[in-house]
Every structure is written in structure tokens, then in C-alpha cells.
Amino acid sequence: MLRTIIFKSVVFIWFLAWMPLLLIGLISSKLERQFILADAWGALFFTKFIAGIKYEIHYPSTNEDGIPLKHNINQRLDGRAIIAAKHMSMLEIIILVTHVPNAFFIMKRELLWIPIYGWAFWRIGLLGVNRARGATNMSVLANKVTKNIMKGMTLIIFPEGTRVAPGQHVPLKRGLLFLATHLKLPISPVGVDTGLYWPKRGKIKPGTTHIYFEQELPASATLEEIREAINRHSA
Image (cartoon, rainbow, N blue to C red; front, top):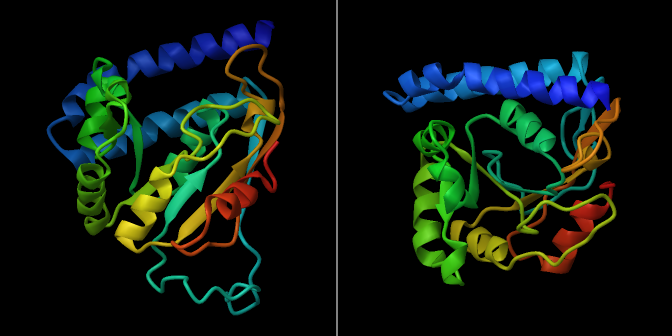
């Protein structure tokens, strides 16, 4: 428990220390993203050297020439796809944002109201949805996502809509299918086991966490196919 207290205290102080720079970064989305990335890389450093958590990222198997072993006729040549990931911990968010270039997320609108950090998230293109009013206006959201995609950004979405515990499976939200169809983008399922090491509550556990990028699925994939892929290697 002492390791957990020290780790969370150090990370909290680290995040606070970045606030003045994030305020300055509001003048430019590019500058703000650089600050956010440096902030995230620092958190990963403390995760490794204080919490004792390392990570490995696994990508789909390919031949020597880089062609996927399982050819997917729906795979885009430009590499664009919607990343649909399991959400267990803050850890996979940090790992994904540092390893996926120009990533942006769809999140609860209230998170964008957090002083300084919420403003910084908005500045780099993260999108908020108002869950309190029931169903999201998907057409409006899709148009906002399209603008970001056209800027060369990559959407990362947590289709279960909430953080889950290891072994917990919840139904996927249909909004993922709407966005994939609207944008004509394949879906890149991502499984994680981060909740085993950095849980929402409780002790931090040292070890090696894994991020699994599965073979891409077409925009026409069913929720069951996506759910199976996301959970294939998840804890």
C-alpha cells in the first residue's frame, strides 16, 4: 500500500506542476499537444520506476513484407481506422495517447469542464458528449469527428462507455457502428489488462501490462464481432 500512496502522490504532484504550462499551451493546439504528450510520458516514467509497471504493445502479426497474415480487404491503405479499446484504467489512456499519433477521444462533456486540464483536452480536439440528456445527437457528433479526421487525427473510443473491472464484460454502445459507417472507417479493436495493475480503486501491482491491437474489422462488423475481438486478450 505504501508504494501505491507514494506513486499516486507523485503523479498527482506531477499533474499539478504541468498546469501553468498547459495554460500557456492554450494559445496553440500543436503546442498544447506537445505539453500533453510530455505530461503523459512523465506519468509513464513514474508508472515504471515507482509503481513497477512496465508495458508491452502487441500488434497484429504480419509477414516479412509487412502484409497482415490475415488479409483484410477492408483495410485502408492510408492506415486510418477507429481504435475501439477496452477501458480499465487511466494507464491505457496514457499508453494509447503517447503511442497513437494525433489521437483524440470522445468523453463525458463534464470532463472538459475540469480547470486547465479540461481546457487543454478541448484545445487538442477531444470531444465531449452530454449524457445527461439521454441519447447523443450522433449526426452532430459525427460531423465534429469528421473534422478531426480530416485534420489527420485518429479517434480512440471506449465502446463499452465506462471503465470496467478485469473479467467484466458490458454491452457495447451502438454509437461506434454509427461513426464507423458514417466515416467509412474500419475498426481496430484493442484489448487490455491494465486493470490488473492500476485498478480504479485499490493497490497498484507491479508487473507487465499488455495492450493488444487485434486485426482490423470492417465498418460493417457487428457489435458481437467487435466485442469478441476486444475481449480476446483482455483481462
